[in-house]
Length: 323
Image 1 (cartoon, rainbow, N blue to C red):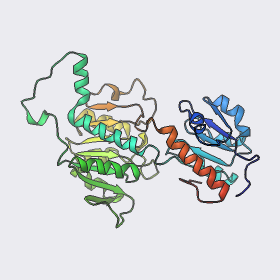
Image 2 (cartoon, rainbow, N blue to C red):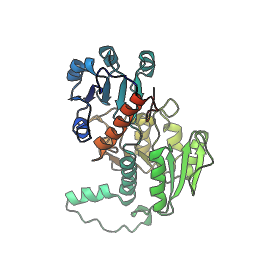
Image 3 (cartoon, one colour):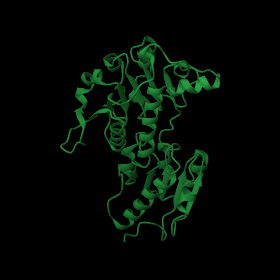
Image 4 (cartoon, rainbow, N blue to C red):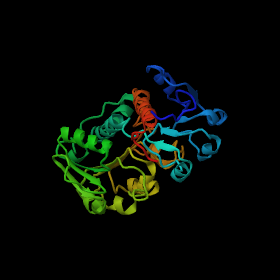
């Protein structure tokens, strides 16, 4: 076993406003010593002693200058675009993501949004608040929809996208999935396409579900051209990152009826500003970046954290290593 810590175990620091990761660590046998803080100011005061940092929303790149003992940063989120990867490499600090910890939760949320759009559950909730019993529509086109037989295009086919595909198949949907490279091990019944086929495939989709990471390639991917390619009866679901969508183009497309509706969990600016038209659009569902929320979040993150601490000690491969 490599001697990499100053003591027998690493000094762990947790910086998170909501999750009690220290409490979860203390459920494990022989947990390492841990300090937990909820604000950036408190984190700046204690990070100097940290050898392992567990963090997500509180991260600022200047923290590296305050942490001379740091050897591992375990992100609490799957997204790691807000960390300066080059600085981590320069200082020999490992960075690992929490990819996979909320795959079930995010894919559940995507399906819930899909069902809410197709069955207009958001409308039913509003009717309930107004004590209004909505009559059956005489127009088939405006009635509640079924998912069976519809086509979904899933943009991004990692753990979340793959599970969304399985859930959609269980509802009898036709599944098209987009990823950078099409491999021979595509799941049965899933038609795979590469990114260059995105625009030409959009007219085939009743639902477009975004589960991709934010990269230079996906930044603004759903913009004017993509929205124009979607059918007027198609709907967009975003459980990826807000900047994958050109938000202003989406608002205009919704206002003009270019697409039928959208269910959005992520936004360019968060919290979503009160002035955003998205709040009051009748064909939009807004959730507050909550797709990844789950009662098992702490447990799942600490599982990865403990594996990575052990991997550093034993000189073996880290889980979800980015740097």
